[in-house]
Length: 94
Image (cartoon, rainbow, N blue to C red; front, side, top):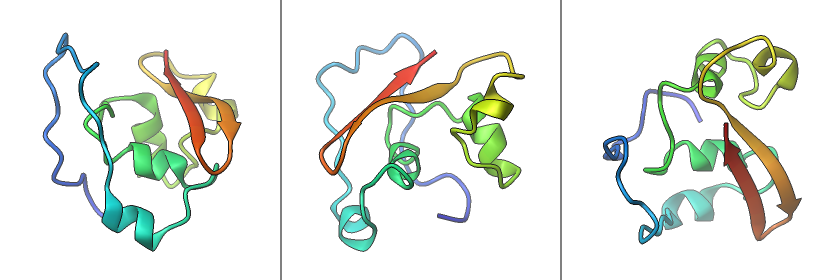
């Protein structure tokens, strides 16, 4: 999952996104959706905030869900809070 941000249109802050559904079939047919890659998949969705702490870690080649680094940062971050592979991954924005 290298390279810059994908060609996803970010939604302005405050946008009601409850009716938006995201699915990238090309990505899903190329990579397994598991706890190790689910964050990479989430990062190409319109729900992802490219200014979050997780992205700062990704840019430094640190796993974006590494709690030892996230706990030392302030700002927006995402946490994987519930996993039932391969169909349910709950990511919480904090």
